[in-house]
Image (cartoon, rainbow, N blue to C red; front, side):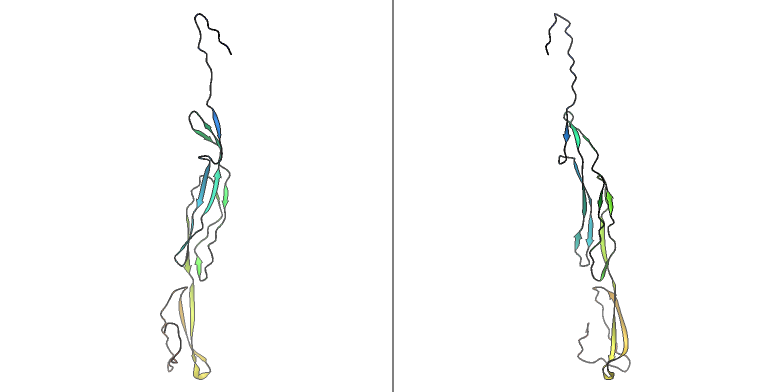
Length: 171
């Protein structure tokens, strides 16, 4: 437009302006949040296995170019983390599993530590009479847990003796 100046009394011209805003797209700073459920499996051999699960949330928004301040839209919808079952280890039992879990963008999730307990084991020592067709004459129970080493005390029944040259465990 054009302005014509008067000899006096020229009034100020008021021009209204507003803050320019631009879209903040996914991938830019502040548009992603990763929620992690840390799952550590403590294996019987002393090693650990990381079985952590993550869910990634996104959001968009608008940024005020004058103030630099973003206004955010809502985070993407809740997500489900699958249930987790520890690997099967023969002779051991895991103390827990991780249940299926619904998570939101700002959730803080407690870590899950899974430990194994050695299963009870039993072995029967059978004493057999080699002079009487290997007839069983005594039993002795030996108790322990998986991978445990125990001392064995072979006790021949009364009036018997152990046959020499046997390859017996612990002897």
